[in-house]
Amino acid sequence: MAVAVRGSRGGGGGGSSAGGAGFMLRSFFSYRIFVSALLSFLFLATFSVLLKTHPSSSDSDDSAFSTTGSAFLALKSDPLRTRLDLIHKQANDHIALVNAYAAYARKLKIDISKQLQLFDDLAQTFSDLPTKPNYKSVLFEPGNEIEEDVLRQFEKEVKDRVKIARSMIAESKEKYDNQLKIQKLKDTIFAVNESLIKAKKNGQVASLIAARSTPKSLHCLAMRLVGEKISNPEKYRDTVEDYRKQEFEDPSLYHYAIFSDNVIAVSVVVRSVVKNAEEQWKHVFHVVTDKMNLAAMRVWFKMRPVDGRAHIEIKSMEDFSFLNSSYVPLLKQHETAKLQSLVSSENNRGEENSTTRDATKDTTNNFENPKHSSMLNHLRFYLPAMYPKLHKILFLDDDVVVQKDLTALWRIDLDGKVNGAVETCFGSFHRYGQYLNFSNPLIKERFNPKTCAWANGMNIFDLDAWRRQKCTEQYNYWQDLNEDKTLWTLGTLPAGLITFNSLTKSLDKSWHVHGLGYNPSISMDMINNAAVIHYNGNMKPWLDVAMNQYKSLWTKYVDNDMEFVQMCNFGL
Image (cartoon, rainbow, N blue to C red; front, side):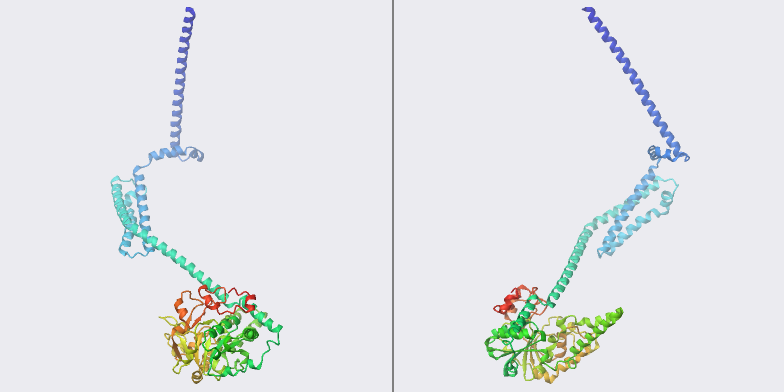
């Protein structure tokens, strides 16, 4: 038992000695490996330095020891040179910052010339500092050793300028930032305004297209009326009474002239006059249309006779034989334009002659809008010849609605003048200068650009004074001169301003309120107090583009009981 125990202890002691010897041996070998590795590293580093010193070393060797070489070169670099580079970089950064604020100031148009000068001067002194002789030779010449005293002085000057720059920027930053925000806001407003202008132009083009085109409902109505006449020729046969009623030439009655090719528009004008008239049987309507719409117009008023025994005469322009190209300048101009267009077409078939084509386009382009160049539109200038036995006549456009009895207009003393109309000028707007070309000497010599214009569409004419003043001859004279459209552009208002210059009597504004076809801000009080409201402009009440706030004033006079109005889906 005891022997076993000793044996056990002896065995244990021997194991412990062997373990200690093994540990010491491993430590010795680890130390030798560490020392060998360290010596190897030092050898490689030394070899790398030698390679850098002797450029004959190969490119592959340079690549292999680039990291170690860089480390040793960094250790060998001049700390003063590093310090100089940092100072120089700081100066360049502040030069860029100062120049940026100076550029902002110029862009924002800040009226602080002194401050702008300070920024420019400061940037210049930053730039000039390295070029000073004492700094340039010591600090920036290659190969020269940097002197610490000079570097310290250079650093002090740079820091002084940096301090000044930061102080100026701190003072100006808020102001410039606010100005920049304001400028950005202005740019945004400008961009939005440009978009709005573009949208308005597109809207105007769209409404112009809508105004010039014939809606399907109007086309349908005309076709239905003509179809009715074809189906019942005996019922709608014209009689002598339709043309030769004595009331048509009775000067003691109230005569109206309406020239239009729009059946439903004419019916609204006639119905609104009659419904608001006190003595309906004393009112006579002279309706003139073109040959194409004559049948439809006559069928309408035979199917829907005028209330109150009022009288209506319906003719076409062709019924007035004196309206021909030898007497009417506008018709002559139309024929000339057609002839030139025909000649141009023949020439262009054989060869492409762009000059001829462009010249023809310039000549015929003025007649693109049928409303402006329509003879129906200019027929008003021939009223005395059309109705030679009448003394006074009230001209109404087909886009008006009458809201009161108009007979008082015949009792207004025009003081020997020809035309009674409502003046439209306010401030500098709606004066002759806006309608006539005063750069033309013929216009400049005869008219005053500040003369107040007046409204077309509801005019009471003294036909006797018209004949005395020879106004139709005046119109023909000026229309002939304006063949090339250099005196005024298209339309009847400029021609009327010239024809009735100094011959127009101003009426009270309540007689005629206009603009319901383009102006959405007309006061409803003005409209309700007006004797005549006028839908002049592109947004006619029978179109889809009409302004809703005014449309009901027109639709209440539409004859909705007429079967063809319902069939043609006017959407009223």
